[in-house]
Image (tube, rainbow, N blue to C red; front, side, top):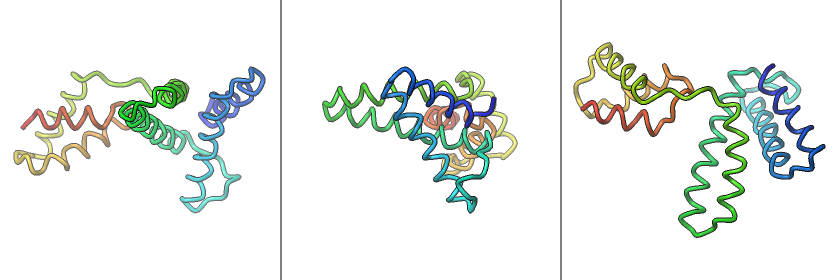
Length: 150
């Protein structure tokens, strides 16, 4: 089943269950899909591909993680809890995450391929690794691993 269909089905189920957090989350995801379609020059009625849906969902996951950090720093545990609940729903659509050891192997291989020896070029290496892991690893973890190679 494609991701956009799963989100629509999840929204229907949330309505039946009267689950407001899930309903808000799925509505937000569908809205983000529409925004992505419009920003790429398509109409809101066009089909959302799985690649586009995954890109949007990963962006929403990152936003939720940032919001949780900020709410906790500001002492707003109530708002952080709501964001965590939404994050848990969004993470169901995320592909399985790679282990740090697997990421390190890819980073070392890319470092050799690109012949990166200068720490000032770590951004290029991080970008190459992120392109290869394609949503299967958090950017912060990839950056830490790449930085540890120098």
